[in-house]
Image (cartoon, rainbow, N blue to C red; front, side, top):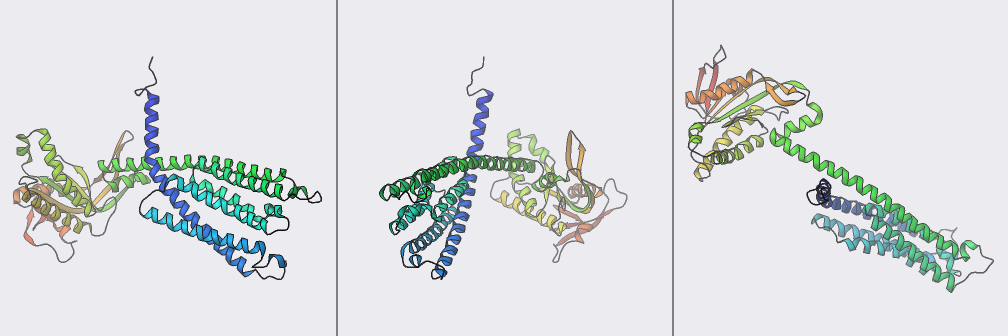
Length: 446
């Protein structure tokens, strides 16, 4: 019988889930911090607006004299709102600074922030009670609703434990304040039991705790869904990266966007590159040395193609075929192809001079024309292909580089589409290429 150990499927699945969660955690924490920054900014704006309203209405005729500005509860409420506005603005600035430095706040700071926010309404009700003829009435003021707002907002932390803490802390503070006020300042039997009995404030405290538990459930579900979304996004990015390495990022993106069955007529510029005398070189080297040489060359050669908005369509052992203009065009694709060819030649010369590569000769042929671009194959295997006479001519022109002893040959079709100033032309001639009746005019560029 197989034990549940490191080699069992369940153990491997557990390790994979732990790794996924670990990889998601930094992204999730950063997004949570962003949500809390937005939360703090919105709260600061709301409390600032509330403060402005309170200050503008402090002398309204309908207001009883005992609640006028500068006396009793009104002054406390205004101070309470002002404190929260300044505090939330400070939290927003602090959290924004941390995020810009790519620093995650310690876990305890979330709980400290919640404790400060929840203590503010408790302190406000206690100060109001000290200035009321019947202190327990402070327990029924609208300030108690602030508790519920902070508990609801705790779900943004996406932590069930944090939401339970927020609800429990609010419930505990409200319950202790209720017991204190009703024990030290009991109300008479003629007062409505809603205010005189301890039973009702305790019920409110229980409701606060229950709301915290409910928010914990919501936070847990939201965290699970957000984590799943990030995990799915990471998986899609890995697929796109691996797929892009096998084809190109542009082709991979085009296929994943749903154009895998779409074929289109496009005007493209095709570049063929070949390392000359490579067979002779490989004959006296081990396979590992050959691969190391090819990777050293392809590293900057492919980078040059991509830098000029092309993609390597196919590796050909000791060379490659690159496409400019499909699946997307980036303007003058012929100019991009020629620029990529010159960059490859220059970087090869630099690599040889620095001793990173041994002396190497290249042959590059470039032609432009109409092709059909799209996915070709069967449901079992499909590839993105460009098909047309332009591809064949480009391959034949590259073959002419050996005969004409030229590093770079372009056809007249490419030359006509180059922007001024054009590269220097060393030679221009009509050449017969295999598979075509009519000769092709080719130009040797330097």
